[in-house]
Length: 273
Image 1: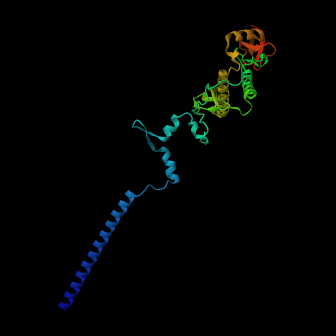
Image 2: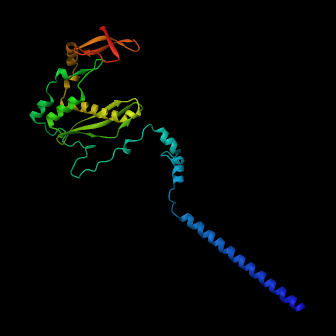
Image 3: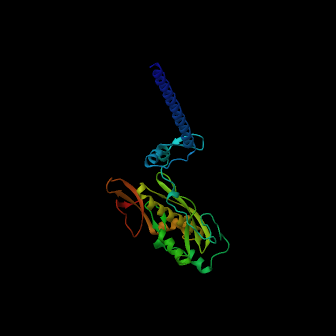
C-alpha cells in the first residue's frame, strides 16, 4: 500500500514538473513572438491612408520653415485665395519654341515693315474715343484688338502670361507680354477690381484686357490718349461737364459726357456745370 502511494505521488510530481516546463516554454514563445512582432512594426512602412486618417490629417500639425508648427486649418484660413497654379496647367511646348513666360526673343531686333507701322501709329478716330463720368478719356479694348488684327493679321499676335495672378481682397493683377510675329514687343501688368469672389473669372479677363491696352502704348497705338494737350483739346471740343442728380439718393455731383450723348442711369442731368 505504501509502495502504491509512493508511485502515485512520484507520478503527480513528474506531471507537475512537465506542466510547469510546458508553461515556461509557451511563455518563452509568446515573449519571443511579441518581440519579433514589435521589431517588424517598427521597421514596417507606413500603413495606407484610409478615409478616417485622411480626414484627421486635415487637423495635423505642419512644420514651418522657421522651425515652428502650425495646423493645416490655420494655414488654409490664413490664405485669402489659393495659388493660381492649382488651376493654371503648364503648357507642354516643343523644344524649338520660346518660353514666352520668360523670353525676350526678338526685342528691338528690327522695326516692323512700313505698312504695319502705318496702321499702328495712325491717328485715332475721335468717334471711337469714350469718356468716363469722372472725365477720363479712353479707347475701348476691342478697338486695340482690331488695330492689332489689321496690322499683324488674326493669329499674328498674342498675349503671353509672365507669371501667376496676384489676388488681394478686392483686386487682381497679372503680368502679360505682347508677342507679334514671333517677337517680344512689350510687357505690362494689367489689373481689375472686383467686389465678390464669384466675379473673379470676369475680373481676370478684365485684367488681361487692361494689360493689352498698356502694352499697345509701346507700339504707338492711340498714343494721343496719354498726351495732355490732346486730352484738353478733345474734352473741349467733344465733351461737356454737367450737373447730375442721383435718382435714388437725390445727391448732386459734376459728371462728364460726350456732347451727343446723355447720362446713364441712375443719374439725371439737371444743368450745365
